[in-house]
Image (cartoon, rainbow, N blue to C red; front, side):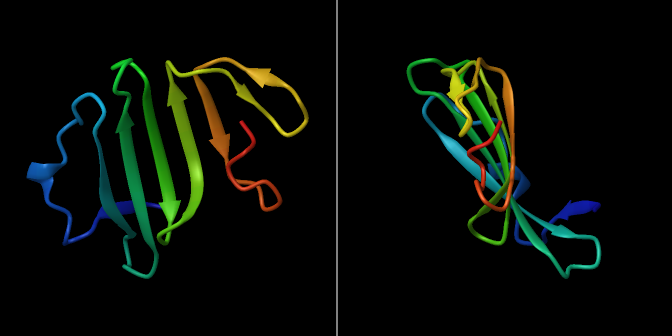
Length: 97
C-alpha cells in the first residue's frame, strides 16, 4: 500500500534524531482511510544503534528494522545478530525477526 505523510506531520521536526532521541512521522494511505506511524529511534550510548519501525494505528508494529543493536532471540530460540528485520506475525506480534 502506498503511503504519504499526513497533513499534520511537521517536516521541520522530522530531522534525524540526536543520540538518545526519537521521533515519529504520521503517515496515511493515499486515500486517507488507513493511518500509520513511522518511528525512528537512535541509541544514547551507541549512536549507531538505530531502529526504524512502522505501526498501524497507534500500537500494532508491522515492520521493525534494528541496526547495530544487540542480538535478537526468536521465539523458536534462533539468535540473530544485527542488522535484522522484525515482521508482524499474528501470534507473536513483532517478536519474530
